[in-house]
Length: 200
Length: 296
Image (cartoon, rainbow over all chains, first blue to last red; front, side, top):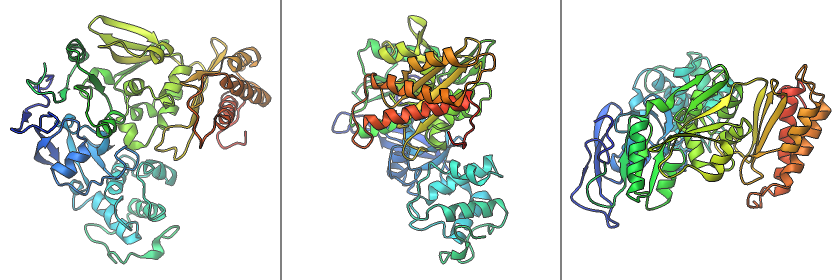
């Protein structure tokens, strides 16, 4: 029922057990990376981040600030870049959720990932899934974005390792068609350090 | 209307304003704690942090009629579900666009809404600062019908139980407008101090509100009077020296305003000073031909 004010969530059902403070576990469906996933035992208050990680095991969506400030949990929700920690999961039942894994093994997201590797734009890797989603979103909307626009568009994704120079260089390479295509990257994790800030 | 049994939170997902009002009314009449969910950028983190949530949530994401914005001959109307991203490129509304462009990050601007900003009523809210300077009208709906209030009244009294903000209305711009803010990591943190300034060449006045010093957006009345008296309204220009006096008067007025709680990292003196600088800068850009990047 599309207009449905009834029921906690369309088609949702309570589980047999109640939580210890009287809450009623929910069951509903989410469309994650093109697959219909069953969420069960959830609390209605849970964010999309919590449900993705703790109910569905989608751990590429990282959990850091939980306030929409760090961007580590960035996903696409109906093709819009959002932080999963600020989305109520039960209100996303009719939306398409795309994580980095759903962006495809070929195409722009794969080229972005390859460029990140080639440039050493990945160090600890915690921010990387969110950044790849954000860069994919940016280059989909604004393929010719200039440096200032790239910096502004990625301002919601915090990286504490790279200083952003290598990330920026990777994005510029993808724009220039210099990034390796497909999966994998020349040099792998032994990234070409000379291609860092100001390089290439 | 509600989930049978159990004290757990109920989620309403209306598709129209009428359905949203009906859900809200039913919860209020049942004496339950009900919250409106707009973009989620404030409420969803709060639900995580706050332990026990409200008894009911009315989620407004699918109420498409709230996402409409429009222009008439003399006014711009912005639906409560319009996001900052929607507003950021709106050429008819340069001030609203300027304020929206500097909210949060792309992720936040894609979610956060006009109605959510009013519902959260953060005293430093970017959009509220602009709406206060713009003397916006707030349109509300409830089971009792529709009503309109001014932004000051809304921020003072809040919505009545069972009321939903449906839109805001501002006059069509009749002169330059700007919005300036300062704060740590501007991209993702609320403003420390911000300033919205609108030049109204038809009514020959300047409207300016500052946030981050007083308990909410604060109109700098003495500075506005100075501008009304001394701007050359035939050309809509003023000398740079007037910008400095404008900033001094703005800061002076803010010293007498009811203050936000003292913050040891950003003492009141600093915030008042910064507000004066922003007000002078906004004035200079809108009236003295100073461009962004020029020394001012």
